[in-house]
Amino acid sequence: MINISKMKKTLSILILEDNQSDVELMLYELKKTGFDFHYSVVVTEKEYRKALSENINIILADYQLPNFDAPAALTILKESSLDIPFIVISGSVRDETGVEMIKNGATDYLLKDRLSRLGIAVRNSLDQHALKLHLRKTEKHYRTLIDGTRDAIFSLSPDGVFLSLNKAFEEMTGWMASEWIGKNFLTLIHPDERMIAKEKFIQGIAGVNIPSTEYRIATSSNVYIYVEVLTTYLKVKNKIEMVIGIARDTTERKKAEKQLAELFKYNETIIDHSPIGIITYNEAGDVKTANDAVINMIGGTREALMKQNFRKMDSWKKSNLLKKAEESLRTHQEQIFESHLTTSFGRELW
Image (cartoon, rainbow, N blue to C red; front, side, top):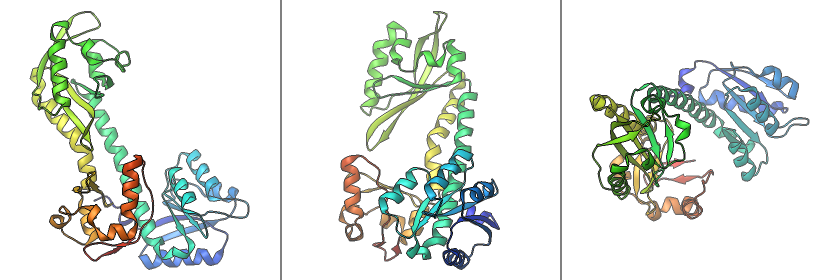
């Protein structure tokens, strides 16, 4: 489990606040949570710019100061290219404003009358930041893996248009990948094999398991080469969103299949090891997946959780979660909000 809030012995905190009483209350809540830290307090833009450094672990910013504010501070942080968790703290910020700050890059926002949650918010922000850094590192690793392999790895839209191609495709065919992005893959296939390729593609989209298939594909020198193609179909809410495949020499079969398996297990591994509780449901309301963190959070068992349906849960109805979920399903838009509920396993959560 990635947990930067536990990894770092002493945190360096930058506080943007002009009210000393509020500063003292923040420090009290952080100490109560068990953090070991040192801090600096700034009030003006000049002080803030001077204090920014890569050594800062987290920023706590009052939304409105006499001559400065959190939105401006967040903009300066983004322009500095420093990647530091940023929590907005305000006495009266509206939910819409807080959500907008998060969309613009803030990690979280708190009202001053709820500072008892500051320690938890800081810990969660640090964990989210650690997860984000891990994702970047892993994505870079897999990009290196994909570009470093001798096998062509590609992705297609549900209508067969190339979305991405790695460097091995260029070495294999002599084409530039950019020449094929946006074009249908069938035009690359030998004319004698296009019909069977089209049929297999349609069958795959329909859910039929398609074994690896050998085709001849055109190179930039007008010579056809034989490749064996293995594809998999990426579903989101039971709808095909993308087709991902490998075109490879038969002798590279086992190595390529392993690489593809690692590629598709990547997101699942990240989610399973995330310190943040993640649970997914289908549109009917049934639980599809749940990681260990959410099991620990709600206080129940995996077996009991996997039998639940959010449309039938009193905790969802009472906490407004059901209304938000239905609105998100109807509008296909992300919902970000804070909720207080008691789980069906008796645990109280924010």
